Image (cartoon, rainbow, N blue to C red; front, side, top):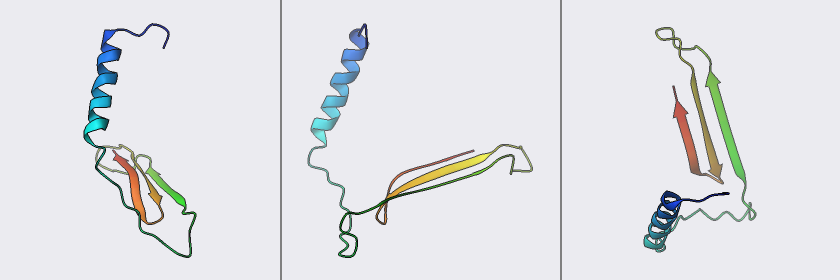
Length: 76
């Protein structure tokens, strides 16, 4: 950023405090002998104007590492 201001500094401090408080938390991924490197899979889908009542679209995605979902989103 070219000109950081006090609010930017305060947000950065808040993020660091959050990270400091979560250092003992872990995410465990299942071990698989046949897939030692692991793989990242992604799925996405959308349905434009699929809802007959309000004509809004539905969209979503999921990212999986091996068999564990790590990020997902669904919107209307």
